[in-house]
Image (tube, rainbow over all chains, first blue to last red; front, side, top):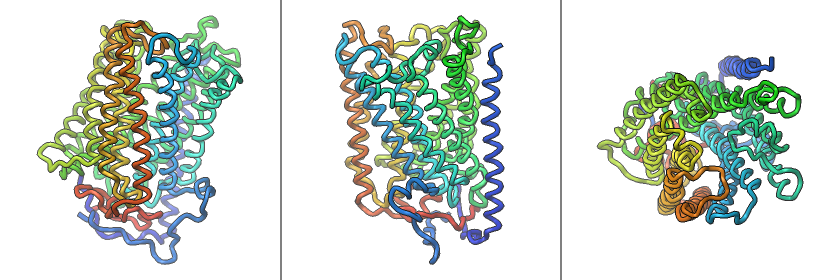
Length: 50
Length: 534
């Protein structure tokens, strides 16, 4: 496994950078959460009593 | 290679530890290392709980006839053992490893969603209490006891069982929610938090294993949640999903359960398929063989995992076409698994091998899991399966598949990264002793079970004919040896936490990866300044 690294990148203090990343994280999490809820509803709906 | 770079300590003014101390620290923490430790502690607690329960079962089976308990208690013990080990031990143990190691290996400052991480963990203890409380209440003479349906919770038994089943349903709901929250966090961390330059195909295999596991969990856990909700409604709200008298179908439950239950095997396996190559590579002093092949093989396993579930149901009645499809698709999984085995062995080939404790556990995993896989092929054969189904052969196969992965593979990882977590090298002499006790105890427990299974001894029955006595005694002795080995494991970990030879940043000579670029023990906050991968 090649994982060479060079020097560190100065991003730690960049609040805007991390704010952007945080928003992207929350967006993706919401999508995944929605997928889980849809699957739950589908499993239930598919076999609902007639 | 910049793996020799030791990360600089946090800048002056940056806080270097938790904000609060004592119990509040652990309740409030959003630090991935704290949460990883809590997951691992929870998992070992559940391992001991589930293990103690099955030792009660093995004590009963030491001798034919009813010795220590009534069949009702026996049923509760085997059911709780299964549920606790799968949902309470194996899954949280993997999540603990992911929490602690993923940010370190990806060069991320923490998991992507730290608060969600905290919630995900703290859902677990109430779920565990819900699961076992009826058992202890039952022992005290209050109520009918815990869920007693077997961990598969087959209908119509689960519809008719006492209120321990309701507790189990809510416990499964909570465990499922926890697992989905953890999976969301893992996926988002891997996709969004990797260090700049670390493309998906430069990512450690560890991360690939957990990415696929998390995707599988988000696919299957909601379906199980739907299933147990249906059971709850059949029990209390007059629906008939699974009751034949009202037009429902008990076999429907089996489809729903195994749609979760079979991929669950790979949920437990794939993280370990990510751990083991790191250990093999470090102690062979060679690069991982076939990185891409292993990634594609893991994807192959993950995809096939969700389309083969009904091989667990050959004896439930199925069309010939269905049997043929599920038989061949199940056998197809052995191809990507064979690729993984080949790559693991090729990593060892002509390496400069040394057999420290993590390596012993990794090699032990390969050998024992190999037996689990081969005996699985027998059960996957639709023509042969009715002969073995519901016998101890199945129990032995299942444990050869899952113990080497969830326990031995996880221990390979724990021993491998323990110096990074504690700052101390582990006691190699005790570690090796632990390994050999596990090997003797495990094989002594389960080889006899293959034999009594082939002889026709059914599982989940608290009594048996005299002809099976000797093998059952050996199996029980092995189980107690295996149980004792876990106490030794805990002693080794505590000893390592309390002291020992100081570990370097790169604790093992052949170790590769970003986690070895930070000091040992890893500082409370790591990679606040992200490294760049070339």
